[in-house]
Image (cartoon, rainbow, N blue to C red; front, side, top):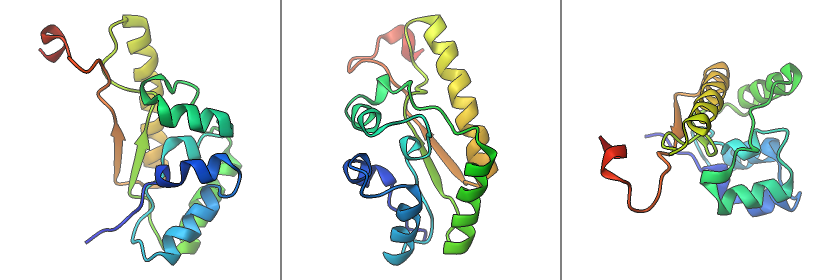
Length: 144
């Protein structure tokens, strides 16, 4: 059995500056997890504490969450995973949801989703979770 805790569980702690992605990795190891399940806000170098809290309350409007492009940071993520003995499991991605009524926004989300999928692959993650998006009552034409 695989066991991981999504870093979203610690999003308020991270937003307060009391935890970052690297202390999340060691915490996951110390708690007996078998894999790392980070939320994309904790991988995004552009996300401030305020952005993280906003994303937590508004997952469909989390377009400020961009994957890191800093090769050094990505290498640190890989090294931390290796040193902890925990592989990346599921990367939870907000702000790249599939359904969007506006075609231009849908294209932007798709581009953002591909960037997150590329990062997940680079980190060796076995899964990525991207929300469907949409309103509570999804229109029939969207479901088709």
